[in-house]
Image 1 (cartoon, one colour):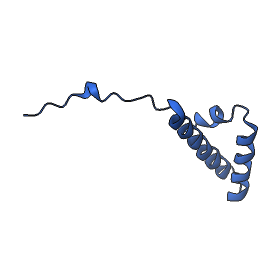
Image 2 (spheres, rainbow, N blue to C red):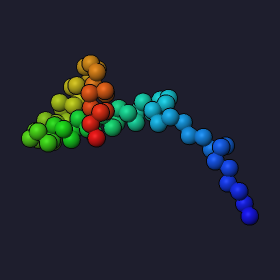
Image 3 (cartoon, helix red, strand yellow):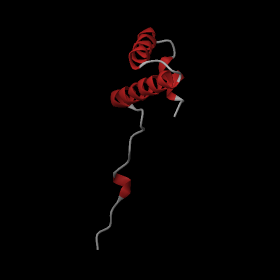
Amino acid sequence: MHVFNLKKFRRQAFYEGAKGQATKETRSLMNCYKAKLDSGASAQEAWSSCANEYNEKTGWATKYAKKS
């Protein structure tokens, strides 16, 4: 019988490091896009609006990260 030791396979925090930051920003971008589409904007308008908000970098990621 084999025993599987989970202690040696510790997971890193989801938003840790560069990969985590990229994941957070991608999720925020998709949440922004979805929110804009839900409010009635066209796909191009939604994408442009989210890109402009991303470039301004004023609390953008935290604003859309909280939406699920």
